[in-house]
Structures are given as C-alpha cells and as structure tokens.
Amino acid sequence: MRADDNVSSSPHALLHRPLFSRSRPLDRENAASRISAYIYGNVLVLAALVPITTGEKDVGILVVLGTALSTFVAHAFAEAVGHSVRHRSPSTRAETLHELRNSVPILSSAVLPCVVLATGWLGWVEPRTAQIVAELAVLVRIGGIVFVIGRLNGERPNRASVLAAVLITVVATTVVIVKILLTH
Image 1 (cartoon, rainbow, N blue to C red):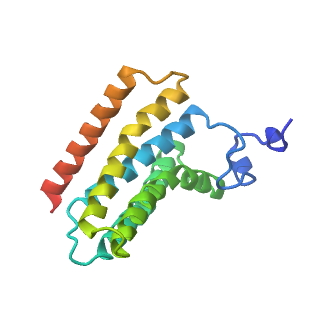
Image 2 (cartoon, rainbow, N blue to C red):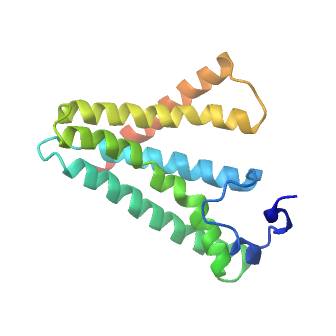
C-alpha cells in the first residue's frame, strides 16, 4: 500500500497532495479537465503565434508567454466562478489548488513554442523558420491529444485514431483562422 492510498478525494485531502504528483492515475473528470485546458491553451498559443511578425525576434516569445499566462489566470478565475455557481459557495483553498493543477496544461502549451522561438532569437535558425516550426509543433500537440484520449480509453492507435488526429488538427486550425480574422 502506497503512502498516498489513504488520501481521500475530498477537497481537504487535496491540500496534502503535491501540486504535480503523478503517484496515482487521474480519474476521468480530472483527465477531462486537463485535456480541455491542454487544447484550450494550445489553440490560443497557436492563435498568438500565427500573426506574429519576425521583425523583433524576442516579441514572439513574450506574446506566447503572455498568452499562456493570461489564459491560465483567466481559466482559473472562470473555474472559480463556475464552482461558486455549481456549489453555491466560494472555492476553498484546496479546491482552488485543485483547479490550478488541472489548468497547468495551459501553461505547458507555451513551453515548446518558446523553446523553438528561442532558437530563432539566438540566431541558430532564421526567426521565420523558428516561428513556422513552433506553429507546426503546436498543431502536432493538438492532433496528438487523440492518442492520449485513446490511451485513457484503453484503445490502441489505429487508422481511425490517425484520421481523428488529422480532423482535430483541422478543426483547431479553423478555430485559429476564425479567431485571427475576427480579432486582428
């Protein structure tokens, strides 16, 4: 028996879990929340990346970081408000930490693109090339979530998984195009 097997799933017990613990598998509800945050963060990071001009090399990194951080804060705030409606009371500290944990994939959506953009900023590759590679990396991350969902469902990858990955990537790209057309 592991030490954390005695920890219940009550909000109070969440205080006793490490913020980034992987000691036990996620339940379906938390997995769904994290996958939702992952998709949301990646779509918004991609929407921030596409219109960036490569004139000022470091601006792209700052835009991506700012997008991820502001989306994380907005998502956490929205979840807290949603919680107060669902439960007719404000979130406890433990519940807030739990929601923050489930929102971390929004922040992680900026890591790879920023690393790739940094290669352009450092002059290792052309800044425009770095931007295109960062955009493609985010698209691959979005499409790849199909395989994570399949794994959670105990399914092996197959042609349908690949088709679903392509379709989700197309849908995400369409969302980004619409956002850019309407907001830039």
